[in-house]
Amino acid sequence: MELYVVREYDILEVNGEVETYISTIGIGIKNTRTNIIYPSPITNFIKSMYRNKGKSLSSQRNSAYAVTRFLNYITRQISEENNDFIDLKNIGLCGLGLIHGSQYISFLSLKVNAGSLSTNYVNDQMQYLIKFYYWLKIQGIIHDDFKIEYKSIKRGNFERIVEVNPFDNFELGTILTGRDERVLNKLSDFGSNRYNLTIKFINIARNVAPEIVLGICFQFFGGVRRSEVVNLTRQSIINHGDGLILHIRDNQKLLFPNVKNTSDIQVKTPRNQTLLMNDLMLNIYKEHLSRLDGFKRKNNNSNVLFASEHTGLPITGKQYHSKFMKVKKALLNTLSTEENINDYLLLAETSWSTHIGRGIFTNFLLDLGLNPTQIAIARGDRNINSALAYVDEKTAIENMKVAINNIREAYEKRESIINSETLKKWREVENGYF
Image 1 (tube, one colour):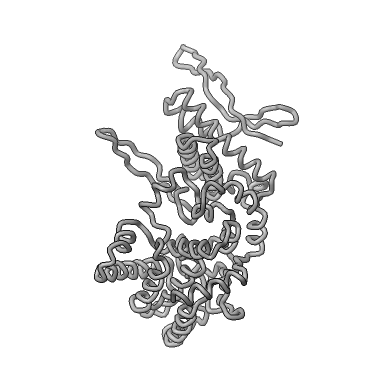
Image 2 (cartoon, one colour):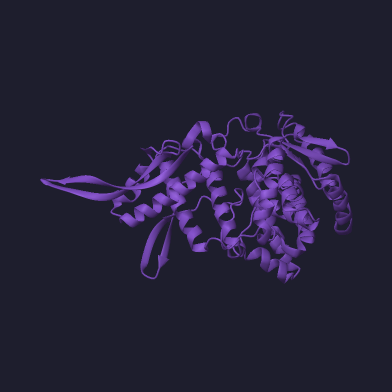
């Protein structure tokens, strides 16, 4: 087995005729069987980002230890055959993605919740990790699809430029320390009145954006992501008993052969997704198919499920988002007209978009009594971290230990299953609210 280690050593600097030995920090790879340490090219990260910028030996050392802890975490995940990490055994760091850093940050954050680490420590480790990922991306070592972005932070008269955190992303499901403060700024659910607001939102969408209202139903009652919705075809919807199952797959070549920027139409998790069926969604499904039949003269592609009323062409993720935001604006106007102050303030003073459907779906499942393991499987999550963000954090670590194998098995089978008893339970709930 090999482990990454931090070592301090001296290098010779020559300035004219003056030769000076200075101490510096490097990263090595230790063979635990022979105890031989080999130099690692990752030392170039410390050299270029810290040593060459005149940073102190202490700064170099702290960053090196942060990186080696992360790399050794990856090594452990590979040895434990974590499905998200196993490919790195052959690919190496070139295959590193945001999901790996996200899981590491979540792992540390859960330790904060358990009282074994401090919030400041985890935030410091995350900052080093962000710099490391930026360096890997800029060097062309990794190719994960995230943007190199910077923002300005002002404190009094002092201003500095820092990296935008690529791990602070709802779709990644990263558990961050201080999560409660973040919820106030970015909404992930409609709150205690979610049933009434969901129906109101959907009915408004029937008038404001009829092309995507079925997709909104899939998001709110199935936790489907925006990019997954626009990849659905007519053939993706399978009648199963009293309900529907979505075969979520990457259909970019079929639907969007000429789209160059594919960042908003990529399927993150191919799977078969069970829906929380109700009469409202079934009626909208029938309306949607009838509307599509009227598009045939505009588009001969019989695969298209979500098409523009004007062109008949498949709706892209960007177009879907634009239509969704029109529905959001109309909802806020309605709540204001109705003088529904509490709901209006909740939805108007926070940031939310299409991904809120995934949070609402999660809370529907919580209301039905599902545990974090069942929720993670029903959402099609690769790991339990995303589901844990909605439940009691005190039980998070134990739930994670129990859930890993079950979630991995469901993910490999591409099944997002909601058991039949729960679906019966939902029928009782929706009959009372819808």
